[in-house]
Amino acid sequence: MMKNFTIGQYYPAKSPIHGLDPRTKIIGVFLFIIALFFADDYYSYIIALVFSLFLILVSRVPIKTLLRGIRPIIIFVVLTAMIHVFLTPGTELWRWKFLKVTEEGLNQALFMACRLILLVGVSSLLTLTTTPISLTDGMEKLLGPFKKIGLPAHELAMMMSIALRFIPTLLEETDKIMKAQVSRGAQFASGNLVQRSKALIPLMVPLFISAFKRAEELALAMEARGYHGGEGRTKMRVLRMKHTDGIALSLMLIYFLYMIFYWWRG
Image (cartoon, rainbow, N blue to C red; front, side, top):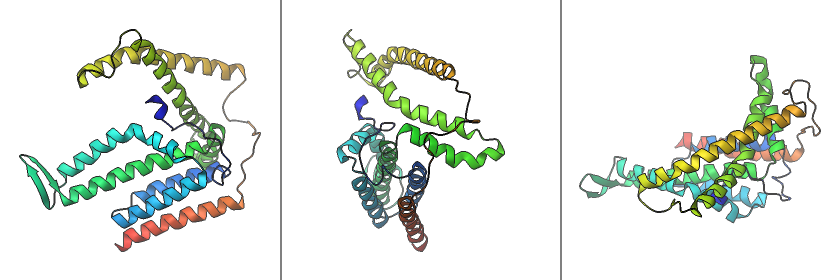
C-alpha cells in the first residue's frame, strides 16, 4: 500500500507540462481546484473529467501511476459518498428503517466522489511533473510579493518542498518497519477496527523516532553547508516564463472562466 502514494514523487519524462515553469503549474492547479468547486451537474463534471484526461495525456505520465496514487483514498471516497447517499434529503427512492436513499443523495455522492478523485489526481500531476527544487523556486517566487508584509516566503517554500520530498521517504520507512514487525509476528491486517488501531501503536513509535532523526540530520547538513535562509542567496537556475507558459495559463484561464460562467448561468 505504501508504494501507492504518488504525491511527492517525480516522474521523469519529456512532455510539454514537464517543460513548463513551476509557477505556471502551481497557478494552473489552483485554478483547476477552484473551478472544480463550481461544478454542480453532470455536464460540468464531464467537462472537468475531459480536461483532466487531456492534461494527463499531454504530461505523458502513465494513467496507471495516477490510478495507483488514487487507490489509497478509495476508502475515504466511499465513506464520503455513503454519507451523502444516506443523509441528503430529497426525493426518496428506498428506505430501510432509519436509512433512506434519495435521488439528490445519489447525485451528490457521485459528484463528491468525482471531485475528490480529480483533486487528488491533478494535485499528484503537479508533483509528478515538477522536481522538488523547481517546486521550491516556484513557490518562493509566487510568495515573494508577500515579503513586504513580513511573510518568510523562502522559509515557507523550503518547508513545503521538504515536506513533499520526505513523503516517499517516510512511506518507505513505514513499509520497512511494518515488514520487520510482521516478520516478528505482528498482525496489521487481522482483527476488528479496534485491534488494528492498537496494532499501529508499535508502528508509530519507531516511525516518529526515525522522522525526528532524519529532521535532525537534515538540519545539521544544512547548517554545515552554510544555509542561513533566503537572504542574499542566488539561484543557479533563474525562472523565466516562456511563450508555452503563456499558452498554458491562457488555456487554464479559459477553462476557469468557462466553469464560472456555466455555474453563474445555471
